[in-house]
Image 1 (cartoon, protein in one colour):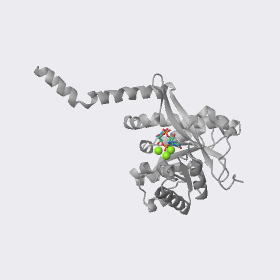
Image 2 (tube, rainbow, N blue to C red):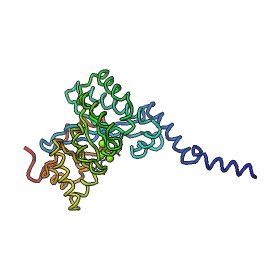
Image 3 (cartoon, rainbow, N blue to C red):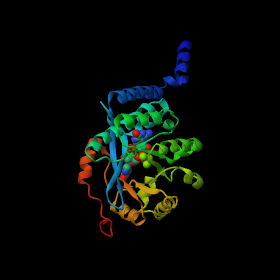
Length: 287
Ligand code: C2E
Ligand code: MG
Ligand code: MG
Ligand code: MG
């Protein structure tokens, strides 16, 4: 009886054996196999230049095509990938997929930049830059067609270190985005130092812009701030024509959101670009 109790204690106090941990380990090994076995998919969501109305690129968003559970979204496995070290092979897969797409598109004269998302862990991987260079070379893709997005909080987590990595990426000709801007907190002085080309205003502000005055005010002053810093403003999460009209009036440079398109399997993207007609701005279509 005592031994059984001891055993129970052992089970309870060994974290590796709690059901939660066991489940995480199972999913982690499944994810490992998914990365190696070709079960990741790259979805693309277009970005549109609000002045010309043209598609100016896309964001690459990873999904896991699971044999029994169907399509799994990154919200369910990126954290796990980060805590298990799988984020490294996952990110390398995403970067290679993005560059491979542009290798094919460039041959048809329709190359367009694809932005990939990096995690904090990726910044501390000193092989990342070498890998990116190798892939550009091996796949013969022009610089500028791979772009990088980093969230404001990732960059702020280790500000001094991140700044160095951003400079290294930028020196290699990689356009940079600050993602989810407005949710972390950056000092203006630091923001000014970041070698980034674009700042993406977080969806939470954009989504409430047409119904909440304070959200609209934040979006307006954020766009002004971004322009004062000499950067381009990107709004993500644009879902309605009203959002588009308001953002166009505020001088937002680029738009991304369900109004334009939901993320789609990469192979559908070129045909989608062919068919695309920009939303008309209330003052008439862009000339
Ligand atoms: P994110 O980088 O901020 O990407 C935008 C997310 O918002 C995407 O969700 C996209 O589908 C969604 N979205 C875009 N427009 C709209 C809209 O109009 N309305 C609504 N409701 N949602 C919209 P997704 O694909 O589920 O990705 C979620 C997050 O997962 C991303 O946020 C990014 O932080 C992370 N993620 C995705 N792919 C990768 C990856 O390859 N590596 C890393 N490290 N993180 C990734
Ligand atoms: Mg992003
Ligand atoms: Mg975002
Ligand atoms: Mg986000």
